[in-house]
Image 1 (cartoon, rainbow over the protein chains, first blue to last red):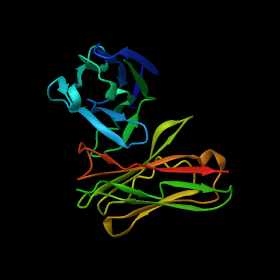
Image 2: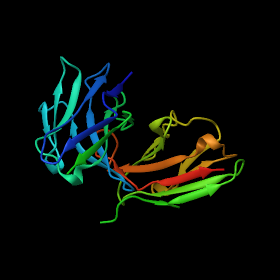
Image 3: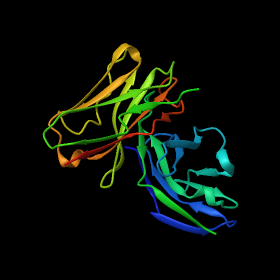
Image 4: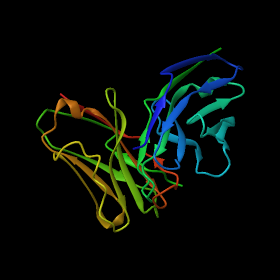
Amino acid sequence: AQSVTQLDSHVSVSEGTPVLLRCNYSSSYSPSLFWYVQHPNKGLQLLLKYTSAATLVKGINGFEAEFKKSETSFHLTKPSAHMSDAAEYFCVVRHGSSNTGKLIFGQGTTLQVKP
Amino acid sequence: GAGVSQSPSNKVTEKGKDVELRCDPISGHTALYWYRQSLGQGLEFLIYFQGNSAPDKSGLPSDRFSAERTGGSVSTLTIQRTQQEDSAVYLCASSFSGGLETQYFGPGTRLLVL
């Protein structure tokens, strides 16, 4: 069965400093992994996805994530945080190896950005 | 273009009543998903429609929950005899097809059962 674990429920950074949101996955198959962001009172938005191509995936708004099979990790990073990055971030794995798009979400990490 | 829309945006109901939540997917998207976001359970999958295939209902928490998708477009999620534990935000998403296609989420319906 597939699952994801987000290692931090809350991360606080200062504006202009790097962001690191940690995610470990468990999967019986070669996983497809995603990061979604949810701003307050807004819908979920896809940041980036890994689908067994390049292990370093670049997403929107300067975010990127690296798939590390040996560590079963898919951490999300950004070199310099902006105030607008404050939101809830979800690490997600696609269920199973079939064509289903069913997604399994982590518990979420709240990113706080201080001025 | 128009994104995924959901209605109502908020719904307050009394325990024991039935509710219907509506989702309008992006035009041309053949796959449609329902998820639930609650404080205790996080974000969890409920049901998945793909074209004319039988829906994947494996995430529905009880037989009080059902969903249909008419004409391959609009979907309705129905909760019968609502309970307080059904209080959550119900999210709908659609994608061009299933699999690895990006899922676009609607703003959700916030359901409160008193």
